[in-house]
Length: 186
Ligand code: FES
Ligand code: FES
Image (cartoon, rainbow, N blue to C red; front, side):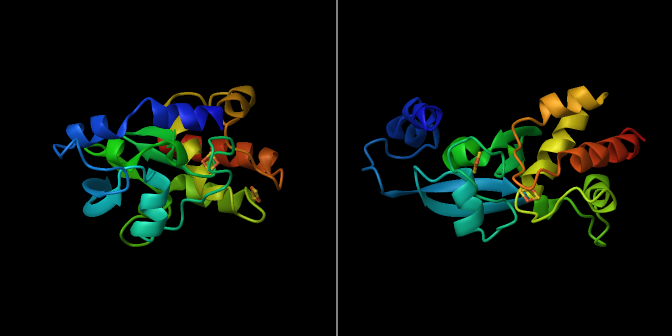
């Protein structure tokens, strides 16, 4: 909760509005224009300046693949990639995500429906049970491999430690990441 409050406190409403080229005197709660690039598509939205990327995705763009678990930066269920980096979308303001590509679980499969190697690996290795944490796990796992933090089991466990799984599918998740790692490094 402290981290969440700090994240909002450090980016004030006037500063965000000014950065967006809008009237810095806008009252809190008044909507502002926000353009997000989600899965390669530009999306123009009118949002309360305090709306997070997570709520913009789920409530405004109806992309509900990204899950809301704790909504306070502790579970990783909301992980997406912004500018290629994994971030917790529940702690990231939509207005601050403008100008960078946002990748979500909905954008991973190819046009023909071919799954991303990480998606296929989670299926092959039974890397989920209820599946609630899975979109966040998969997005985080892709970044983990790209970062070069998936060379050993210990590395994977360390660098995936921000993504909790209440079903405790952890051994299968590690196995899935190792399977996908080979294909991603091709
Ligand atoms: Fe964002 Fe839990 S919903 S970390
Ligand atoms: Fe159920 Fe991870 S598969 S929380």
